[in-house]
Length: 188
Image (cartoon, rainbow, N blue to C red; front, side, top):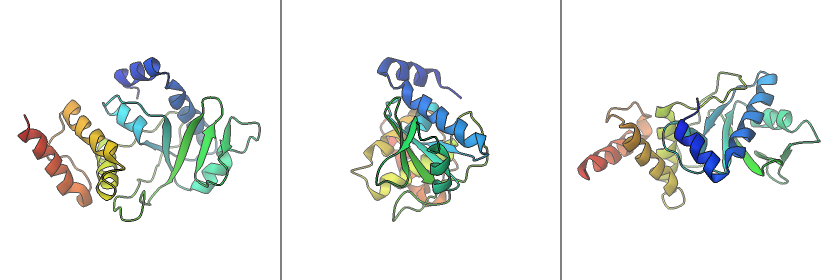
């Protein structure tokens, strides 16, 4: 899945290295039959809101296993960041890849867990739209000033994709989705 507007944005802003880093990581994980899901900015782009992102957010079943596999080649280009157990960098582009634990929440207080990936593939596996919206609203609601981009992502995807009011988001964020959707309708 490559959204045309996302492709144009990456080329115009010089951020196509982010996508290449994600593909490299996905390929290495697939070689070891480890599934992944892309969440975060790349997923937002692929679901219809072309905005800049400079990192990769990748959900894996076991962060430490994925970390070991991705950084096994000591010559690189994927290397560990010193003192950080869930983050690596692609030395070719400087892109940071955050490895996120399937079935866990992004931070204390959140309620929507990352989904468990099921497909091991060198093709990027993008999280579904409903789960992406749910994760974004959950993250924003627990740190509204620091995670304002998450709310903006939701608003822009609702507008650009003309999402329905009854979109099947997680129950934990259902009311937030309805308030956002209704607010957008009221501003028309």
